[in-house]
Image (cartoon, rainbow, N blue to C red):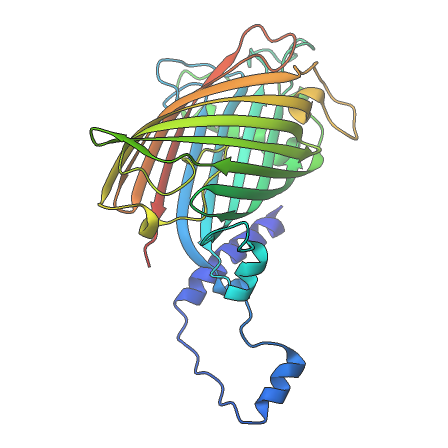
Length: 361
């Protein structure tokens, strides 16, 4: 895992270093070089060094403490943290035309994302060293998320590959115990001996999001963002549907705000955030998942572990607020989810905080 982390950080830093590298003089081509160009291919090629940093985003989800105001629980999906970098790939015109054909995309833009995230799941009573077998299994999930996006004024496609590990090597137990020991009057988690077994995790996500025409009433802007997608892999296999309504001032030219369990729009940066230095909006999202597999409930794929019977349909609703001043943006939201396993006594809620900085070039 340390080697993978070093590789990911190297990929993150390479385009940043490349931005500050001095311009190299163009080679002195001679008349005979045209024949050489026909042999080796066109000189207008693309490489990873063409990536330009757009955004840095930090995520924190929790079902108690600060993100979820007025509640203090530790159960089910109890904590999530992440850091994500967004890049402008600056594709050549030829490559851009292949990735977004002109008969389907009008003035397309592109984005690339790289993130590292950790999710933690526990039973309903973390003081019980041997939770009931019909309670939510303990589990941690640590993974890298690699994503590619293409978008125009009306729609966006998101492609994502997640690579990581579930189980003890995800360091979920270490992180939760460290946080609880750092603050007074916190219960010591006791049930981690029952967590899911170590397993390599591979998951693919696709989502198409559409954007309605923007409406205005007395200077207040309205917009709707429906989305359909799916997850496929040994962590999560499901179909997903969402619709988001947002209302505010100076709505950004993106496809919705970022969230740890959702999608960050990598195709826009500070230069595409509309007029003025300030924007503000409220949003509400409703969605339903049709679940075929959830490793955190159904247990390990290749090993024996605790499991519960997952619900085939899970609904979610989120409300939140987003504000931006120049290149700094902040978001806070509350998410409510119906029961996602049969013996779950009630639904769940958690809060989310997102803080980011967008680089302008």
